[in-house]
Length: 502
Image (tube, rainbow, N blue to C red; front, top):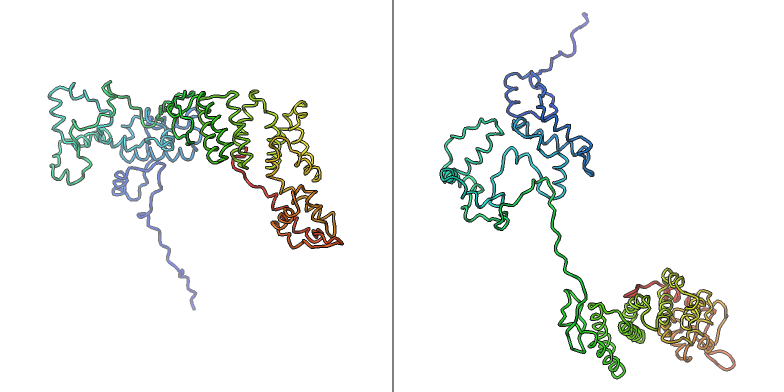
């Protein structure tokens, strides 16, 4: 047999007529590309001969002095390619003024700032001017009569087409027959123009000549709104009583009471508090009184007296948020050496920080104390309370609680139950198997045994009470109640946000 030498396939040369030519650096004009394909399907397009002005524009864009922070080189190259491509597709490379064209980074910055971004369409196809764009109301008056008539009779579409002539090298025939009115309005309503008399004149600068319009790539600078003058208000209201309203606008002098009226108001409120003891009314009136002092910038001994009385009333009623607002203002007023009770309220501040477990502000207060201030009875008592709690000496703490000066006992009432639970947790560890209820009453500063039993019941410890001993006295089973008291203590020391906390 003859060995077959025939190949298993026939080589076929690839046709080059349907190959896609490699894309040039910048997209070619679509019209030129079609012409080149028709003339020679195998001829590769030549390299575009860029005008010198375009080359200088590209070099100017990448200079270091024209760099804008925040705009990457990749974004700038993409914008540059887009700009030159659009000009090349319209055959407008030689008609555009590249020396005054904004750089690509400037175009990107305008777009990001939200201002009117620059568009090559505006250069190649200028938009029809609106009445708000550079309209001069005296332009028609200064124009010769023949020019006026010619401009008014000219079709707006013809003006638009005429504006394209420079971009296409003057190849457009401007003598073409214009569209009639019916087809013109049927094609698109956007070419409809209003009469000149109805055009708004927003840029006419209110009769002072045409306004200067900046290019769209220049960031607009907004004039800040005028700031209302700030200063104290001199009140003219003569009413002694006035409800408190939160200010949402500048205060009206007709609704603000002057200082002599406020002094009479304070005497009235002090008398009504002793007679009626109506806290909601008194608190509302004191807040209104403080507001009138604030808007009039009155900071004197009378202001300190008002805040001190309101703080004491809030402490008596357990309104910790309102007290703390007064305490914050008193701290600033006392720093100006106003008022004779600065040390009293400094002691209250120490007890308040013990209640809120605010160690940071506590350290600041302790650092500001002078040796003379530490000898004051109220301040010394507050420091002893802090020391007893830091050492876990609950016996000394409750002795200090029973001997609190001024109104410090009202502040200690806010955290004494918490400290009682902590003391009971320690008693359960130290006294086993039981302890008389009378011992707890005396040790933890309860007023009576029934109050002690009620306190234990409120914290789920009523099941640990039994009658024991020869005298058949009520005992607390401390050996079995340890876990219950520990859980109650942890729950009491949970941090809670307080309204008005400093």
